[in-house]
Image (cartoon, rainbow, N blue to C red; front, side, top):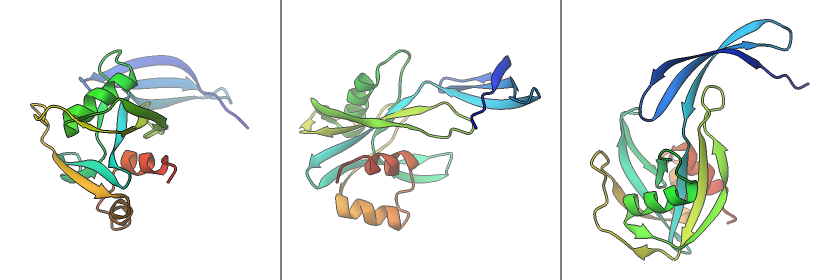
Length: 175
């Protein structure tokens, strides 16, 4: 049985540069009302850069929400009306200093469907070429790592890689 919740009232509770939070009053199929809190996010990309057939480029950075360092594929949020491919090209160079004209769309994921509308578009990048050398944004400090496909799998199993978008993106590869 499919059930749709009809939004009957919407209030914006909080707005910041990355997301906004809304409280929705919804009418349920049975006629009763319920409250839903939703994080609205502009979307993001995640890119799997292949340095060669067996070597992936990954970044490591401190994530304050987890109070620790996280190893992940390069990723970033869509800016305004930016299309995902442009964002992918920009983030790849910003975070790895590599460029690619061989970018393939793999699919998309919804990160936390219970309370957030964020969609992450997943790409792979082949035939990398060295681009700019200044790796970091003013507020981003990254370490670049080369990881073999076998090492990646071991890092997931040993929980050295716990980032959901990274693990999901890897699962989209036809390996």
